[in-house]
Image (cartoon, rainbow, N blue to C red; front, side, top):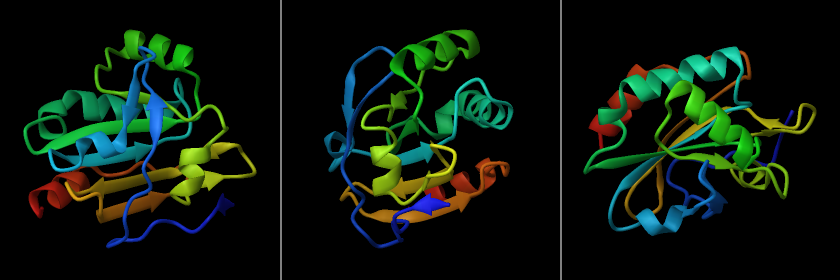
Length: 156
């Protein structure tokens, strides 16, 4: 089961700094005062449901990477695995590595599956002040709806 208590709507989102698929550091707090952020946790690169979800995000990127909002995706995969997957699937948005300490960011958001050693499908919409405005947490096998993301972003 998931470790930790999931972050709730109205709570301050835990800050983090992780490397993207190019080895560049990305810090959540760098977006405060500038952009809302959609943080998408997913179990593993190169897996079926994850691939479908992240390619859907790629195909609708203008809705998730614009003047209002930025997209950050996170899994326990290494920077190298993320780079290979990003190149293969043409994913240009940040794929962040929660590799070491293993799953620490997913744990801080309460979406880490201890038994499997991966994040469950948690998504958090964080406003420009760093507060969670919307969230959805699905089991490993259940994909999320991009329509729900769209509605939450529109409601900001």
